[in-house]
Picture 1: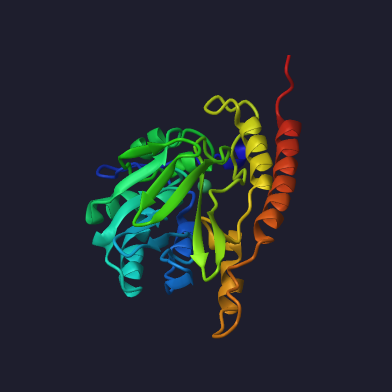
Picture 2: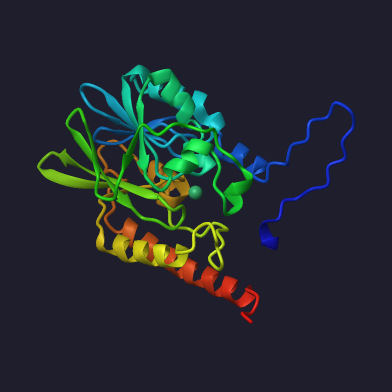
Length: 291
Ligand SMILES: [Zn+2]
């Protein structure tokens, strides 16, 4: 795909080590800017960087972290957990939304430091294990390989310290893209929290993708499913996807928690599906004719 051809002619001299240029070099600098960690709601904290998320879910006994952001985000995540008054050594489970370098990058390091077990979907497990995805722009940006200790199927759960998270495999963005959901008691109300995976095309080849032949149907199935789901608190792998900055600016003592917004998920999905259809039409129009 020409649009994402990153090949560069490298002229080597003795002693040079050949390495491909990182197509995400500038983006990762932006994404990995520090952000003061903050309390989202209930037992959920944001401990990621400015542009790539990581969430800490605490329990009285031990904790869960979802997503590892970029490989270079590990020191930030560790410091953010500590700054919120928690110990990384108390993190017993690591979860992953999807096996792209900007969301799985620090999992190996976090696992090593905490001794936590990594839980991920069956379809993304080999990508996490190798650190490499075979298609899309992320194929040019490998992650740090990490061993998955436990695979989870669609509908499977992870329970720890009285908290249960359910895996909803919303395939498309990656084959095993996993949207994690949980409930928590907020006074007299039960709130539904969604740690959304992602559903953007993000440069994925939709036509003739030999690494993921059913990719279009996978997206369609996930759109249909996400339209049936509910979330009082919609959280996502990139802050911009859940309007983190705007909501943070609305946090005021005594005011309603801006992260509670039941309309966020349906608004997001409607827009994402329009974007998907436009990108599919664009790729269909530029695909070589079948002979
Ligand atoms: Zn991604």
